Length: 139
Length: 270
Image (cartoon, rainbow over all chains, first blue to last red; front, side, top):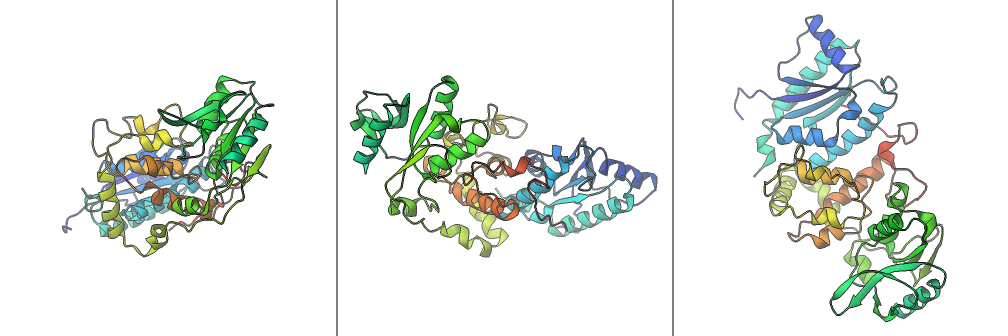
């Protein structure tokens, strides 16, 4: 792993909470890493396992899924599905030799700009320490 | 055993519109709808073949008909999962359950080698159920394998894939009209072996809360990829995380489409 490895992170942000949280972090001039490629989705429940897996296939070193807190979902229970689905995808990654820490699910509300900055910074550091995904993808 | 099955089928044919079972003829063995008067000496139990999708097709084609099926434990579990996803009408199906032998249970690593006839609205049992076979030893050893060992193992296995879609085509739980594995958005066309992780992990993820461990995907795979190791692991996780065993309870709705109130889960976030 080279010293200058900068991880590329795909972040799926829900329109109602986490995207607004990211926006507020920007407005408040909080430092959040430039490694994050945000993709706005209407709900974290929209994030199909296919989307996560394709992000990894396309070279993402990490995938972050952020949604509304449980109970605050704009669609009442969209994020309930995410809460069940993402842990299963994480396990599957682990079973086939991709470090499950490369996929993270968290809840960030629109008022939690500092949490957005914290989660993204932490995650970038985690993934940085894991190294490029290419090494785990194999032939 | 087989004579018993034939006698029960003959009896049931008097009241049912037909019974689905395997038929052996000079050209081979295939699923067949036996009607009254058919030659039941052609009815066989081997080789195992999933009959649930045949029932689904027949019931959709003949919405009034009452059919029967000669089914093993795995057939019954497949029917349970299909019934709750509205692919099979349980009320129009009579289950003639057949118990597998101890050798068969061992060969399939099957925990449940006989249909649960209590579960199905109308059913009977032919033969006596045996103890389940031991679980696949690879699944038990999995905890001790490092990420790197797992990676090496699966990369070698997936590299053999010729993308014949045999695993999907044989699967009784794969009944979607449009399949994610054929969508170029998720699986690139014309790439062999299919890119990791999309093809195999998408299928594995779709098996979560569906796979009833019939082992057919592994049996048909021309590349001998031990797919059921992966699916057994995801079955275990769905059991641990969501308390759901596919095929075990016809009244239990599929958990991944329920809310956390309806089907609670202990979520561990970092």
